[in-house]
Image (cartoon, rainbow, N blue to C red):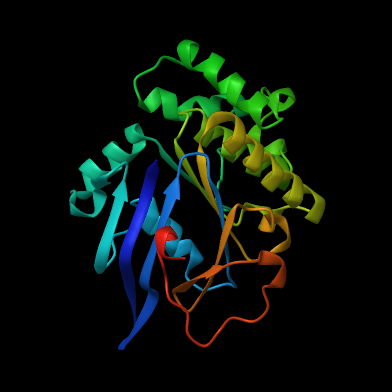
Length: 246
């Protein structure tokens, strides 16, 4: 079943008098339980792609569908609420917790905003920390975490709502190489056991080589990669294609 679909999406930014294409005619589909890797250098468009897919930004052209519903036609407020409850999560390297709160309270925060009491939210928050291997840090103050632990706790804070689609933006940038590989392996295991679909955008191709499908992105153009192990330089031109076309 297709959960997320982008159809001919283009996103532009203004740089003074210049107009820069962050995304250019991008199309792809994502199914239940699928792990999809997106490889690209900095400023290639991969972060913009995830923000547009998550409904955080709107494209100038094209459409985004989640569970068959076009989110790009919704108002910003309705889109945010609908995607939150429909089950889409975005995590990246910018998770910055308040220093004086224990980790488990940070993980519980999304449930509090959904109307749960802290007492009700603690059990699912604990379960989310266990899923990412950070239960032992539940009562540690957030500023006592390592960069790798912060990334895992940020993931737990997203998982506590049990998303159906998880969009992951370069979290291993703040980790040691071995931590990054372990983190991506954990994401793949979560997809297998829960049926959650996962999109992982990364500058380093090594941790995402085992993704079921992979794309490269450069200058906002997406290209399907048949064999990730053979990826070398980006082509001069790359076009986005749906899964059914590749």
